[in-house]
Image (cartoon, rainbow, N blue to C red; front, side, top):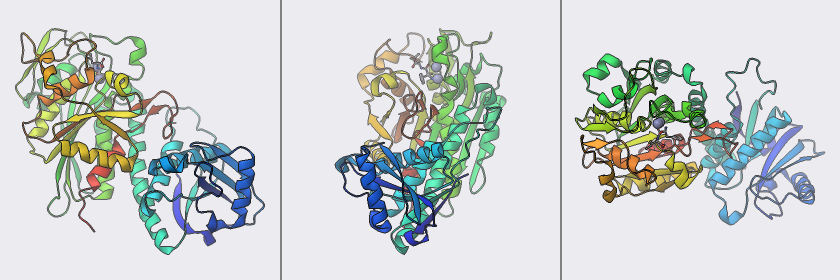
Length: 495
Ligand code: BES
Ligand code: ZN
Ligand code: ZN
């Protein structure tokens, strides 16, 4: 556990490690006035060693100051391009460096980007996300102990109280993300639908409740698409409905559906081995819903929030769905299943139909839906599409705070013909090699009520990383959670 605290420069104890940030080609690091000439001297030394403030660049300099015995300088890149996310990423780099050096405590002076509270929030998020590691399955605990204390240095008392706010929010946001990462990184046999239900119960309390539907109840509700996907698996399916009700009249009523395929083998349309290696992350949408509710309990927003997660494996057991089978969804629409690997849209069809009964002001779904999303946008950008330009705009606005990137794809009407079936209302695939991510969105739209503001977020490309990235080690990223939390908080009444 790392403890974060805010403090004034005068309260930094003797023999500390201090972290400063610098824009490209800057003469002095940001905020250096707080530490006087000692930091400037060390910075000159770093520049002589070749440090010039490029994003991700890092230098560690020994100092003979009574208060600071080591300075760590981290580059923010060109000042003109710098955003709050530059600070978040630089804080991640600083955290990784501190961990690699075995530093027990560090004092960070954030660079001025975005305003006081959000600066501290970005530092906390960057530090916690960048240094997160999934260690639950090692036989021996990692011997590198964590940095126990991170001080965030404020210039005055008013900034210090803003930092306190930012630290608390940053911890809630980052802990929600790492909670989701833990669930997603867990091996699939240890994260079956039943085990996910246990994890879901763990986020209840503080106004959050969860209703658990078992297979018999799912059958009674007519969720034939979810049941179809479940047929090839030994593990029973579950459907969860989370609710958070604020005290007083809600400022907004929001719903989030999350795809919860705890392992996607493809079913009888079996995936090749390499494509299956990471398919434990096919429940990242559901894990994100769990994480939202974990944070919501702590944040107590003024909006009412609902979460819906269909949970099942997609397996090729003896009773599995066969290509060519037709299932009847909860909404009544029939679907010809031509590819059992396009199962996410089937389970979400029933989740969206169920959510439709709540008449929410706005509805989202998050799903690792299509490999085509990676081909279209690569690993840094999330595909989104929806029925409400206003809601799409709100996600773009939240994205500037979270640093997570989004790009809107069109729900092209002309392609609706691609999912017409000769024997059922719809088929679950379009034309091979054509607009796969859009087809996924168009299919889901069939299960959203007319007039419902709805946004589909295809997190297949961004939910997992094979190599280390700025904020994540290889594995689950938890992408989407922080953006949606910002969006939820945007409805808070001015306090
Ligand atoms: N879970 C996969 C999508 C996926 C692929 C997520 C790679 C993350 C990385 C989904 O169920 C799937 O298999 N989709 C198919 C759809 C196709 C059969 C129309 C795909 O993308 O190939
Ligand atoms: Zn699949
Ligand atoms: Zn899938």
